[in-house]
Structures are given as C-alpha cells and as structure tokens.
Image 1: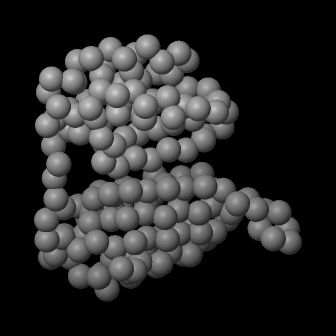
Image 2 (image 1 turned 90 degrees about the vertical axis):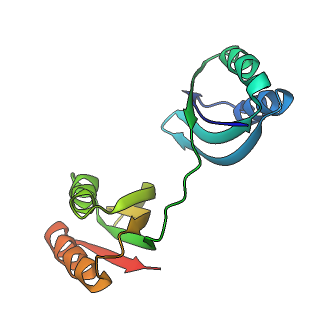
Length: 168
C-alpha cells in the first residue's frame, strides 16, 4: 500500500466530498485522515489516503476528471512523532496582523513542531470587535521544560495583547 496526500481546492458547491471520496473508494483507496473547510467562497480538502500500488495511477487519472477542482497528490510516509511531548496551544484576543507569524517563529526557534493549527475570527459579544482564535497541537522536544515555554508564551501574549494557554 502507498500513502498519498491528496489536496483539492475549488469553488464551494454541494457534493465535492461525496464525489472525491467516491472516486477514492472506487479505486481501492481508503481515507485515513482528512481536513476539510470552506475558506471564503472556496472549499479546501487535504486527505491522507492509502491505496494499492496497482490502483494508484488510475486513481490519479480519475481525480483529475473532477470539474472545477485543482487536485494534487504527493507520496508520503506514515511517521510517529516519537517521544516528544504533545501539547495544545489556545490563543484568543483582539485581531491584529502578525499573530501567526510571531507565534510560529517562536515555535520554530525552539524546535517545536506544529502538528495541526486552526485559526478563525469571531465577533465579541457586545462590541462586535473581531477576535482572533488559534488552536494548535504541537510536539515539544523532551529537553525543553514546560515552565520555560509557558513563561515565553506569557511574554508573547502580553506583547500581542492576547491570551495564550498551554495545556495537554
């Protein structure tokens, strides 16, 4: 079995997921993991699919036949994150430019790997002010102490005017 990452992006419409998953199943593939979201007026999909070597080429051809979607495939290997500690980072506060940049730069400098990240804007209940929300799953090397990360994140939160929580 081969493992493929399949990405698909196109104008949002009903039936995209059904059409894509139908083709994968028809060609002997199995969706192992996926993320799907409407972003603006488009719909974006990323999937980890396992498929037999015998079916891989025909799957690729069939995927390209879907109208109005930009589809790409890439081989990948299944990999464990090892003994690193997994944590959740939750951030929320006033929306301002550069929040993701500042946080991701800090994490990269500490060799902290982002496993998943989701961001979205909500409106404050009374004022309607845009609030930025970020939820991330990260892998922290064992030689980095949680209290150091927590202290650094508190300083970043103060500079950005947001709240950041680190938890398991």
